Image 1: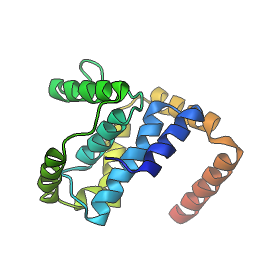
Image 2: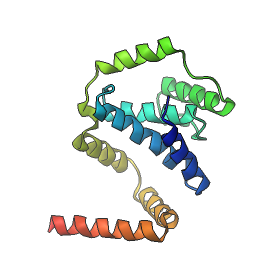
Image 3: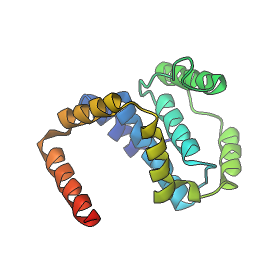
Length: 165
């Protein structure tokens, strides 16, 4: 069950006109925090991301499941089920099932969401995209950031450049 604050931040992102995948990012952040706090683990950064996206779909975020050929068939079916449950407002999973799921995840590693692991995941995901696709995403980000967001992004970029020398 996602925290109320996370759901509210995601709904706020949608109201601001951000994409469903951006709104779903709030749930992914929550999942990463849970793993870092020691609530449970994950086998890989991809699993942590998948859990977050599934929670987002179940919470009603209109994040469509991956298309044919984009993910394994079982993953697609699972995403479709989560999406449908979220759109129809189904009740949460049984406490017994939730506890079992949590117990299984507690046996997994907490190193899967370290800065290095997430950085590596982001780089491999980015390298699979075309240059044009990355550029379009950056331009869309610029359009939706707003004045303050652009200013802080520029400061962050300047800091990064100065560190690299």
